[in-house]
Image: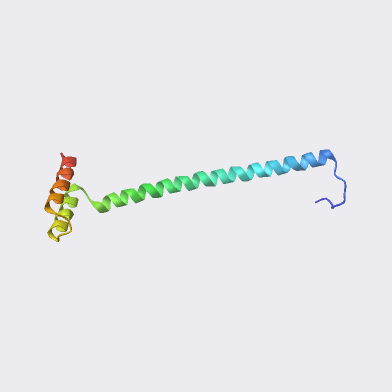
Length: 93
């Protein structure tokens, strides 16, 4: 690097600024690629999470069975059970 008190010509300064600009451009490209990779990973994670949650809740029949258990234990009323059961059966038909 230049000594602090050494006079730098305009051409040298412009060349140094060009080199710094090129390096900044490379860093920005790397940051963009990392952001794209992270976004892709986040999308994959979200997709897997939604798929796992859908699998965990099961299909309409499983949901009706669980609702029946909730009704039998007094957590929901029979009317609530019947309403939700009708909605779930409509998905099957």
